[in-house]
Every structure is written in structure tokens, then in C-alpha cells.
Length: 339
Image (cartoon, rainbow, N blue to C red; front, side):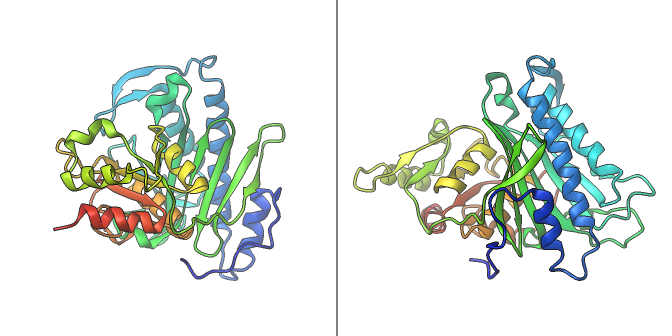
């Protein structure tokens, strides 16, 4: 569990803006760029949330007819979310580079705004295949401190690096309410719920922490015949009534992760015979969620080793993911890597 001070000075109902401003005061070296970056993230999140909530009325249901770099059909809301976050971040002077699931190449910040201290990675709309059935979707993001020289353009070295070098990470979940979860090294994991009546995010989930273990697992058993036999055997053992496990699976990464973060559980998206390297993206899905879960006292592996020890070698590199309560991750990882 990370060695840090709990955020006991913040009461529920504290605005995200106040939270950011007051935590920044504890860093004399701070320039205000992280606070400004998060202001832009929350602006984009509010815009996407509004569009999600009236997707049918706004003509946002359905596909565009295009296929993205991942080989997936692009939904209209995918395009809107990607463009909204790009516009919010490109001209704020806080980013040097942006990487998006929807873009094959890195997004370079135009002059004179490329002097920002941070590189931003994102899945602008995770779970977008659920849009048309009104299921929960979200935005996942990671934030690195830049390595490239300040004043010049951002470079691949700013993002192709170990996951443990993340400065912060978070996600926004668009469901019955809109919640932004932010993890930082000094203040752990905190959730902020958007009050649409006033247009502000308020602290609603303070200092989130996972117990060492839980009795819930989440994975798509429709692929069971493509799993490694060791994983299939371990899942069968979980189903023994003596162990008392329940399955909960939504089918949206951000939604399943959010449920397990609040209630405890294990999420697995393993390698399969068809996708031996896994399907989730390392840089802007696995890295941010692994950072969040570790700050909350959990763990994340790729079935063999710690996710945050991996070094991203490509913008859209894939990975298996085992993530959740610490004891369950260790047990699952041991089962999947047994000789």
C-alpha cells in the first residue's frame, strides 16, 4: 500500500477545484499546470456527459461507418469524445503530447502551446459498443510528466516508458450519475460526482481503499474455451460453493473496474487463443487503471508480472489484465503462471 497521508482534511461536498487548489499548496515547486490540466479534463468530461445523457436526441446513436486503428467500428460518440478532449487539451499550454485510442499517431500540440509539462494518454470513450443499449461507459486517462526538453515538441519518450512513472491517472464514468475518479501519489484515490444542476464535481468517495481480498470476480466466460487451461481450472475452483464467490460482469472495462473498486473484486481480461497478447491497450487502459488500483491498495498484473513494471513499446500495444484486490490478483497470477 502506498506510503502517503490520507486526505482527511477534505470533507464530502468539497469541490474538485478546491481539492486541486489545496493539494497544490503542499507542493512549493508546483507551477499550477496540473491544476489547469485537470480543469480542462473536467470541462471535457462535462461536455461528454451532457452529450451521453441526450445521445438519442443529439443524433449520437449508432456508428459512423468508419473503423479505427484498433480495427473496431467507430461510434458517433467515440468521435465526439475524442475531439472534445483534444480541443480542451491542445490549447491550454499544459500538454506536450496526447495519445488517443482513436488516433493512429500521437497528437502533437501546436505552437505556442506545446510547452506544457505533461503528456496525456486516453481512451476517450471506453465501452462505446454499449452506447446504443444505454449501458455504462467512460473515459480513461493517464498523465506523465514530460521527458522531452521544455519548449520543443513532445516526443515518444514522453509516453513510451514504464507505467510506474505515471504522475496521475483517472477515469470518468457516465452512468446513472457522472463520477470522476482521480488517483495521485500524494492523495490516493478520490471520487467526485458531477452535480448537473450547478455544473461542479463534488467529493463523494474519499480516500478509496480496497480490502486485501474479496469474493467477486468479473470476466467474460463466453471465451472460456479459448483460455489457458490453468485459468479455466482456477475459475472452476472459484465456483466451488465452499469458496462463496459470485460473478458480476457488465462488459465495459471502466464499469466493471469501478464496481470492483467500490465493492471489491477481481477483473480479468486474459490472453486467448485468438488474442495471445491480450486485447486491452497497455498505455491508456491498463497503465492508468493499474496506477489507480495500486494507490487504492490493490494490485494489477498481466498474468505474469506487475503491469506498472512493463515498458510501453508502442502506442497501441496490447496486454492481458488481472486487476483488483491484492490477494485475489496474487492467487490468479500464481494459477495462470503455474508450471
